[in-house]
Length: 131
Image 1 (tube, rainbow, N blue to C red):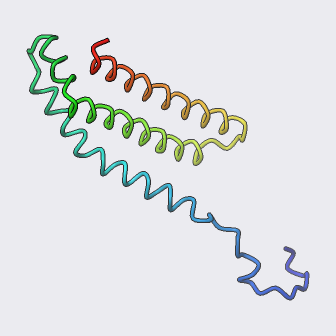
Image 2: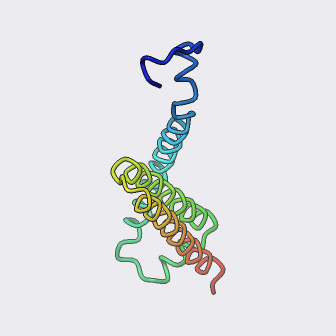
């Protein structure tokens, strides 16, 4: 709005609706919640792998065939790729300024994250059911 134009709207009315519409806050909370969820999942994963150092393939498969381990591995993969995609989205939105490049990268990151998470889940399911 030009400074010399007269209007009956108040300054608050003029700027209302020009903000983030709470999208940034929702994204921030989602990022923090997945980070918090990753703490116990990562600890479980690291200790599970350390516990199987030097074990044979059959022992590792037996561990992965337990319902608890399979569920935890699926959760770890899903939360990890969701968290990574969410973080990369923020970086792309902040640092890529050409709109078509931004859109292409956002689509590629989302697709790649989904594909990798799906591959991890499929691998765990195949081990769990013994296929």
